[in-house]
Image (cartoon, rainbow, N blue to C red; front, side):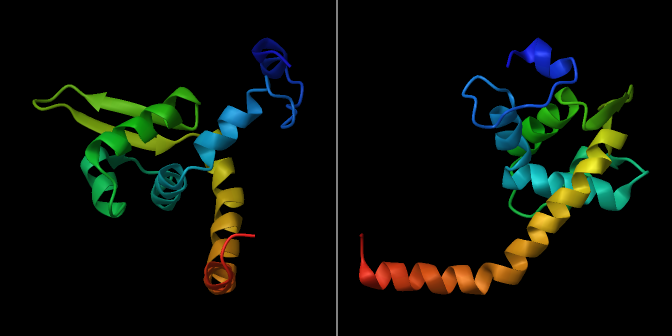
Length: 132
């Protein structure tokens, strides 16, 4: 499927190597994207400044937050507003499309939190056994 077909309303095909669905899943499945969407969703409908987002996402670098937010804005999941002050005050908020992503990401986070102990146990067992 071409990008224009996807934009025209046709559904993507994850198994088609040319389908943009793969790239989209890579972006929205990244840990920093999930965290940024969660923090912005908690603030909705209000905006958050860049520095506040960075404070609320432990461990993220300024560069990684910038790249993550640029991707969210480019995909139409977030909006960026710049106040012409010195230095400029940059604000972000989720769009309706971005807010619609929070539900699926929340379900995935909950699944991970529920099953993490089991996954860690399985990893320890696999490490003890060695490569298969």
